[in-house]
Length: 354
Image (cartoon, rainbow, N blue to C red; front, side, top):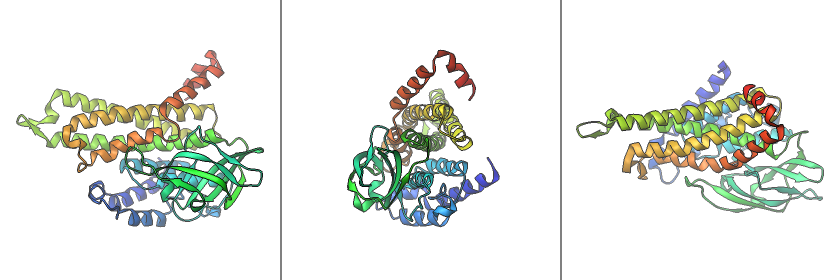
């Protein structure tokens, strides 16, 4: 990790530790912690990390932004930090200045399409858009007769149907009914919806990996505190075995997510090599979320399922993030199609090159 990346990650960690303590958040049912946290994040320039200075952002590198997402995952943040970062990144592809305030991206799923009409308005529906109801603006990737375009849209001009994901966070349906964007420009050559989905998939993979790290820490700490049959449950072989499995899932998710992030940060385009890394990361991290959450709750027993315990904040978000920007089954199919299209002789060189 470069020195500048360390500085950005450490800044994020300090803010999260000071204003996003998981125990404090779990006890605050009214969400009073969100405003001070968002103000601090904004003052540090983190929501617009991936936006160049001439577009109103912080001009952080992709690697620095990815380090922020990893940290955010470890705190299981229920604020649109990742979404605003992705929105700013998308707008920056077309040199559109990012506004202040929370943003999100649409579409957030590979099967939804937003159409660019001949008169420059947008029409369509995007389902499962994270935090759309909390966002001031949306960064939209639209499809028109001339190809893809990137637009900045005032959220107030859209019809937003509120929904919740598994963790209780915003997971909304956004309908564009001839919406006039605040700004719109053609997407760069070669940029398409797959590129947006891959970027979102890696962001979610890093967050899942971070949440799994915290689940492991919480589970190990609990096993060293809980006494059963006059000894710590960490001394029981079955518990030790489960913790080892959880550590393995956490390590696998972190390796896959960071490798995909490095591929995007070091690459020049969303080519087949990046596709392989990003799709594989989303598949592996999603599998790890399912297995890791089950193991962590098994270690905790009944107490881990209670609303008063912090474990559910990590496990439910890790599970919910599996569906954003393409589920593991979607990416497994797409990865299979890529391999089949390249042919059997190209499989090993592609894999070995990573």
